[in-house]
Length: 249
Image (cartoon, rainbow, N blue to C red; front, side, top):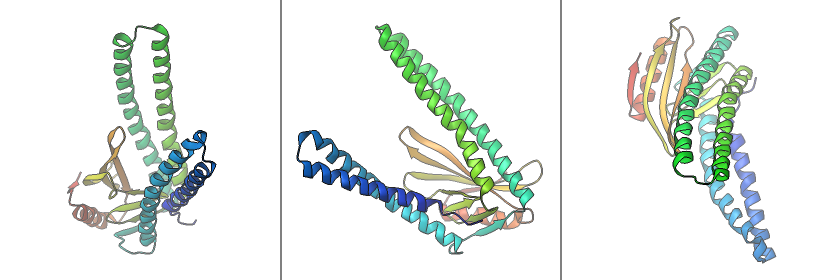
């Protein structure tokens, strides 16, 4: 199976959207009509937004390509087929558990905020009903995304080569690429953990600042049997490179 540079796809998508933005901008200027002014503004927004995305993804793609070519690489691990599927199943269960917890928190938040607005902010029953429908629709979309994401990740990891590439600022784990040194990203700590069966894994914890606030993420890097000492050294180097705390749990 071929190694997949995930960031390249988003680089190409960003480039395509930039071209679309340029076409819209040109069409809006050429038509010189009030009814086409929106095309100018939308084109400018698309160009500015995805030029930033393009350079961000180009940097990610280069970093991952360097890792595949053993440049700045801390570890390259491979798993046997049985161990590969065991790790994929474990990741799937942990992602489902994390998302269920997140959904409970979001649901409570929606109920409290929605209930407050329905009780104190609406005098008209139709407006209140429309607001309630909108809140339920948004919550339903969040539920669908949260429940579908672990399955999509599971299918991707199951089909990918059973290999792991670890660098000081990012990791490619069985088809999934994560980086913890990026704009609006702040790393908190690195933890070397062991499960009940004694299998080790490296947990890189970091926040990503998004529209609705900082969101906690964890990149879990499984360690093949026999590489535990190397894993401790790798985890320590990641923490040192990013100036955060290293823990063993």
